Length: 199
Image 1 (spheres, rainbow, N blue to C red):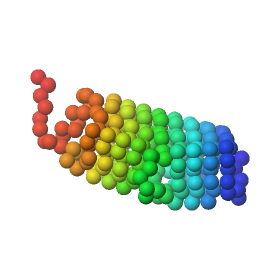
Image 2 (image 1 turned 120 degrees about the vertical axis):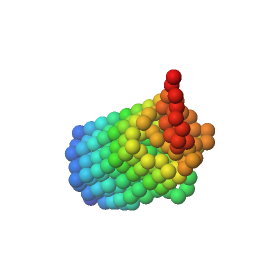
Image 3 (image 1 turned 30 degrees about the vertical axis):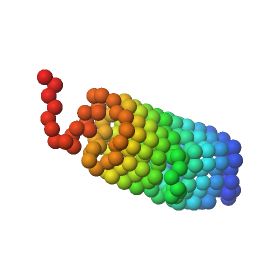
Image 4 (image 1 turned 90 degrees about the vertical axis):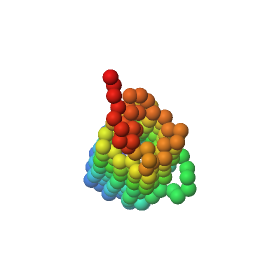
């Protein structure tokens, strides 16, 4: 179990627990594992997550108010409708503190965040706001970006190999040395207002 009066958890494992709609204040989680936990609508105020692992958890609509992240991994998680801009992020350009594998991240916001080297592999990333973010060297391989927003986004050296449903204006985003795969890369031509013939 998790004692809300305790301020530090180190190398603890939380498995199959229901924390939905609970509020956590100024708790530090260091090298902890969350496995199959329900964190839907949970509120984290001023918490710290350091080198934590989330597996098969439901974090949808969770709020991370002024909470910080460092080297955290999420796999097979449902994290829909999260406003990641409410968290506390370092102003120093460091590798992304978040890695997502096979996660559902729809209807979330990363607006204006510095998340260079962000990893989102095999994820559902539909209707997500990436405007004005630094996502340089990010890896978005095999992810679905249907209806997601990119504008004034730094995507230098980002990897979109086998990603799909993205619509990125080549004039309003920095795509230098970014990697794309055919045929989805043809979506990049939409901003040129040209017609393609497959005859």
